[in-house]
Image (cartoon, rainbow, N blue to C red; front, side, top):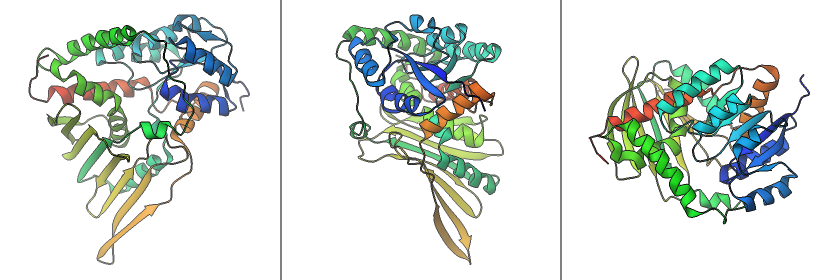
Length: 357
């Protein structure tokens, strides 16, 4: 057993870092918070006090030069440049979704990571959900599905954020984020092409919200889906139909809702059975996805729910990351998966009717 403790630098200390990453870095014995980086001095000071961290940085480059930092988790708005710099500095990397904003940006990052010998993972935490893992084992028993469906109408996040202590920034100039969004938007427009650049916001929704759905779909059925059809439904919803090898159709429905509940599931339909994996709100701890089975029984229908596992996907993700760094385990969510999802997202948008900017 390796007794080394991994010093982790947290780059970007907003909501997801505060609510999910920092608590588990503080809890798990093989990890420790070595440094924090954010453009908000106020948030840095509060988090430094809360977690007893003295190494506080306003610039990620300074954090990467800190020898006490073995690995970084990247939770900023724009990830690609920081991933490149972290790998170049010899740091292991866990990067939040998406890996980058375009496939063109992501492709060299994949090549760099594979050549580096470092652990580099995308934070697809739902692939570590124990309920999802149970669901995969049941889907495998179906054999070739007759149909697949992924549905994600995201309900409100804000009501769950109140369950946790969160320090919000009030000292960041308004033009900082506007400049970052404009720069990313220009790169996205170039990737989508002039004929489809008008779907920039829908593409961003697909990357931010839909990245989970593309990942769980890929985790279950691979990356070989062809886009047969895609349709925008307003500015924050889309419908796509994919075709997987062997003529297996998949319906993908992703949108933003105003529900008070979370509404996300993966379904696989076989000849005589059906598996549904229903995901919980990602901010709920100790609440894994719920697996529901429908099967033939005595000429009729038998429906049952499999018992879940009281664990949190973010925690399991960090335990796996530590296992990869300390014991040489193979990353389950390498950067190549992030690139595959970006490729699919672009293909979905390009399958829609033209819409110039």
